[in-house]
Length: 439
Image (tube, rainbow, N blue to C red):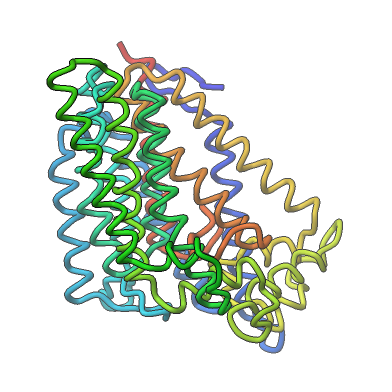
């Protein structure tokens, strides 16, 4: 796959795959803004071209210096990212509605710092995990690694942008797995996340639908009861820890560690229960049953399914999708860009697009596997975790299999910050691939 030019190696399959995705994205954005009457497209297409040019510049800049240098600068990059996220809270603007304030508006340019912060977090976490080495198997070190993620995660949640915040979960879990963390520790974290996120989702659904019946739902919806249970279980876990000092058997310490997950999960659920916005609760209900609010919150998902279904086998043709051209499909260039594409190119076109994504993921996995050191593998793993999650969630949203979270489809959705971040991420992957041949 890679061709030798002295010390410079290019994975042409990977490069062509990315270029194909970008070209498809540009054509789709042109189509979503096209006006049949005046036969012109909106300015978004031209702005995306400008961001593409900027992204290519940063892609070339990224591959020009060894990824080890970026790891040396990790603290500076991380610090810059946090400053930008703080700036969003002070002077940031909301340009998508829903009360989300995620953008820095600099004249004609709208920049979303949370996008680039994902890469900065990947780099500094790769540095930390590489230094730890096999010590990541220690439970204390396992949880300490999350201290890196908490500041950006907290600042993004305050915006509040839950969709972008969710991306940090697969990034961290994938990197921890590759770093050699124990599967039992990762499983415990997933259990904790399941309680912390699952309970609020269940409660939100039953609250919005007015079905607050049954003792279990009453308990889960009552923050005071959850806190009381958490305190009791925490005391039991503490007693088990104290007994361990005298008995010195691993049974008590394992029991305590397993038990303490529940109060932490419940406490997280209480926090999310308290801060979950009404529009976010409505999204959960509409995800399960879009027909409940056909002309309101469920309209997006229903129109998205109609657009994809109307594409049939071969599609309506370029610039000829009625859902797209007549603007029945909301957020057609961002959240539901896959629906716009599917309407015009049909099942065959959609399968070809997913084939390109499969090739992108496959080449990314090969870069992880063949990286010359653990540092390269960790960075590549974080990036691929980010890409896979975005692809899975966005296509899932468009097809009604996942709730609407506002995550863009890599290289296809309109968005300068997203495209720039994705091209820098690809630059890092190329950087790792190129330098595995350098001795």
